[in-house]
Length: 184
Image (cartoon, rainbow, N blue to C red; front, top):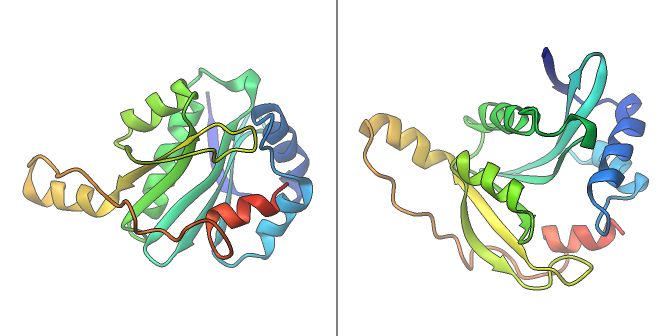
């Protein structure tokens, strides 16, 4: 399968919106929220193409040395083909020299996604109670890129676990939680 990783364009929004609404039932982003990402200077918009069509996407915010995967999804008919892993690898490659950490939130019940993230080196650093609109908790996961660089330099020394609890603002203005509220 020939996959292409590229910057999202406004022309991709119909496909991205379709994948988003198929993938996230209660917390899908509105069309306006997707369009708003094009106005944010720190938003990186990415799509994956296969057979000439958009089959996956990600929105990643890069703020200082931290990259936040705000949303990532693969079209249901293209899942279980390694596209999510491939996309995540491309994201890590893209941000490894720009960020010290990549973080994301995932539903506590989304076991396949949690397994994927863990297999890529992400660790759970925090549980966010009632994070989603239906009351489900989220797990905040991080991949420490600065640890990856150090590990290569240290030639295989075991990294210390990341612990970033308490380093993020509480819910409200200027946070990912505040932004997510505006997505509805």
